[in-house]
Amino acid sequence: MSSLLRKITERQPALTESLIELAGINSGTLNKAGVDDTGRLLGKTFQQRLGCTHEQVQLPPYLLYQTDGNELEHPLGDLHLFRKRPEAPLQILLSGHLDTVFPPDSDFQQCDWLDPQTLRGPGVSDMKGGILVMLEALSAFENSSLSSQLGWTVLLNPDEEIGSPGSASIITQQAAHHDLGMIYEPALPNGQLAGERKGSGNFTVIVKGVAAHAGREHHLGRNAICALAEFITELDRLNGQREGVTLNVGIVNGGVTTNQVPDRARCRFNIRTRISDDELWCKQQLQRIQQQINLKNGISLNLHGGFGRPPKSLNKAHLSLFQLVTDCSKQLGTPLVWEATGGCCDGNNLTAAGLPNVDTLGVLGGKIHSSQEFINIESLVHRAQLSTLILLQLAKQPNRWIRHRKPTPQELSNET
View: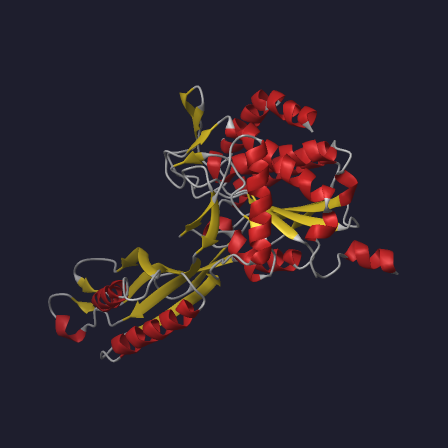
């Protein structure tokens, strides 16, 4: 075991070089070309180093409501699945995402060193660094004598940063055929693991009014922006009314000129929930506000979207897996604990599908989703060693972790 971990340490320069190359490819979620370039590069590397099968899956387009109420299709990058030993007794799903929050026109496109141990760059922590941690750990594990006891699937999706709308069904499908999940989101800012997570919903409101000349016939107009402003005010008042529920308006637009009463307005907002019952309460409140606005003469407000990620709570199976991870971290001299967080990720989706998982096995860094995103470069090695040790411990006692799940297609084939 010590030799495997030591070889990972020797890989530090190569990991750093690979990360800088990956971060230099813009893979903002809606930049399909860049996301696919990232997927192709990683696909080639995974196959060469791991000798695994590779499946590339096209996803449906992402539909986004425009101010005029029409839907605009945005093509998404491909999803990638890598598999090894689907017939093994224990099956692990390792998950990561190819996309970042930085579009092609962002000023943040390249890496630079803040100091000898701190690299700043787009997606270095969230989560191109995490994908390299996953790859390095699997490579080390494949060189161990225990590898035959454990089969794995790697899922790399292109749309996690917008809630995984295109890949959610595949995540759920894959969860059904695996025993445990390992997700490579970055560690919390203090280096610890995320435990319980809030749920999340994304919504769009489209308001239609009546256009009119702002001077001559202002009285004939019905101002869509003003109606939307009332909706937003009522929405914001919901904050603090229910423990753990937050509502945030993120995008607002409408109108074309100041001398016309605007007849179109749009806002997009996000809701975070603490428990599953929060969703019903939020839906009731949204319906109440919608009905209130629609009583206005000449105003029509329509609500689109919904809750895509339920809250992640920790059951007995989750806690057992967390204990294994913390035990492994102690062996490496970096003891970890888990903490609740308001963020959400594909770990929410896996939990909803019944798959126990740890979802912050990625690198240490900070200021993600900003132009100051950085990584502690040594964490590439440290976290790869942690995941290697986790995989080795799972493979030592595979029967302990097997759950009641749907058999993989390979297992069904073997039975017949």
